[in-house]
Image (cartoon, rainbow, N blue to C red; front, side):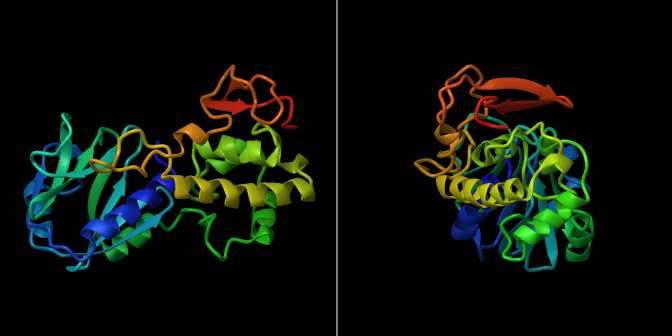
Length: 269
């Protein structure tokens, strides 16, 4: 599932290519992907200008001149592609938005959605999300305060969108590895020094992943050399049985509340 770095990569690429442009045509191939009747969706967005693209946690907000917002959550398997009728993927798209001769394809939204909302509705929908971990307002002291109110395992907390927004399975494991802490650690057992390491790991891993274009497998457009650049940089995630890059011990995989957990049980404690 795309996480904060993947969605931030999409946000930046969309701003560069479609920010300020007018939606000239819209198509809906799967009604369940949207939240209003297809004709209403099409009439509202067609001729509307995309003023700005913002992100909140794992969501993208395509803000339209009319005051409406297209709220996107890719969930599991969703991705975006930017191309034309002749330069497109051989896959079905649940929704397409045309900007002249170029088209934004929304693929894999069987579980995800693209909802048409007012700005107030969008704010209300996202109101219960936790803090943004890369916000300047998110400090070590705030992380320590959040941890002080939380029980259970560290990974369960990190992927809880109501506790902290934007982190999922992959980056939770990568952050814990960077910090040298097992994802299965009980939160009350963390020392102040470990909390400090965790905070700096959050900052380092998410920023590195953003700069590398995240781990998406499908490029955003033909010739895209940014999207998916983090795939080869994962230290533990999806590397079961491979040697740890820090100590050489084999990476292990376990399950925690139906989630996969990848870690080095030798150099993470």
